[in-house]
Image (cartoon, rainbow, N blue to C red; front, side):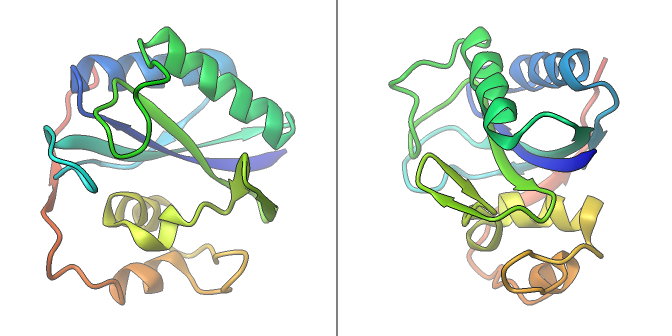
Length: 163
């Protein structure tokens, strides 16, 4: 079994799509560990704030199949081709880690560069996997977060009702 980590985000009907996405993940993969939910400003475009979190689960499926399932869950939540990076999105499910697997395939980059680029990925990842090490840099995620420049970041942990 491989432990998989996903970055989850939404800025269109945020609560509805986070709940729906997590429910679909649990139906597909069983037990899912969730970080806290964080509200952060849109990055790279002007838009409504996002709700973001990181989820983890174990699977025997290959990374490519997990990624294909994530695409289906996104589409089932109204995600369209127009909802690309740097645009509003109903649901964004990004496979950020697949065990220690490293892939430089442009269609399935693992580990995702967003881990070290964006606070909305790194902070929740450090929360639930702080002692794990990045498979390329070999640095622990809690150390990466501790050294992350948050001076221009607008992000806060929120109470999220999953019911």
